[in-house]
Each structure stands twice: as C-alpha cells, then as structure tokens.
Length: 116
Image 1 (spheres, rainbow, N blue to C red):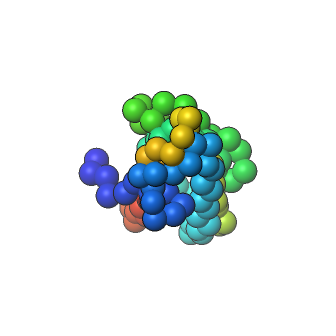
Image 2 (cartoon, helix red, strand yellow):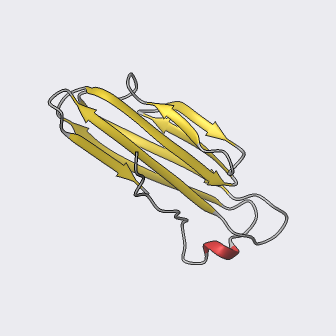
C-alpha cells in the first residue's frame, strides 16, 4: 500500500514546538454504506490517541512505531468521525508531528482515503 499522508502539526514551526504542546485534529465524513474493509496507520512525535466515532481506537507513546488500526467494525453507514489528540514531549522546544492515513473500501468497490 502506498501512503500519501504528510507529517503535520498545529502551527508552522513544528521543528520548534513547545514541550507538552497538545495538537487536536478532527475529520468528519459520511459513508454511503458500512465499509467492506478499512484500516489506518498513525504515529505522532511524541504521543497520540485516536478516537473513531467517540471510542478510543489506538494510542502510542513511541513515535518510531507506526500503529496499524483495523477500522472494519468501527466505521458505519452515515456520519463518522476521526479525532486525534497528539502531544509533544521533551523538556524544551523540539520537533513535533502527527501522521495519520485511513484507507476505506466500500461494498461497491469504491475507496476513500483520509490522511494528514
């Protein structure tokens, strides 16, 4: 699978983010049917928690390990939402970033990719 997402952070100076800074991003979307197959990958420097439709679905405190998340049973027909809370670590200003990408295949074979 080829990924097309990008590392992001809440402001332009992600290379010098304050220690302890929290970045929250949300994506609301609608599916015409429940997915036939869906998954995502996520990581953040330094930590993140992913919520799918209000339920915690993944978290990590190690930005060097990408988390693979099955979304098959977490997404539904109609309104859906990804919410990610990322936090920079360290003792002083340092680089911070979030990477997330979801691939969703519907029963009719159409696909939807959602990423940072």
